[in-house]
Length: 125
Image (cartoon, rainbow, N blue to C red; front, side, top):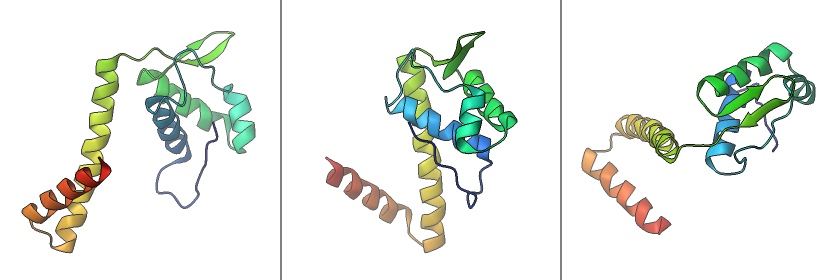
């Protein structure tokens, strides 16, 4: 898996890493038991500070996406399906909140936004 960092992003580098690894896990690009690069190896590959990658891994571990085994490395954890669904719902809510803010800025009425969402869902099926 390749991690892409952007200096133009408003998100700190550690958060960019965290988000991309979470997305890879949620999309089943990384599976339970898969080993992640060591903190030092990832820092070297991305040409960033070890402290930055350490922060990203700590956040992933705190959120239950990875576990670190002393002397062995960091691995993707087995995901509970309820937890997985809750995380995906949280992401959908974030995107919808952003869409609502953008729609308000554009002057769309609630009904127009709902119609637009319905149309997008129908086209996707």
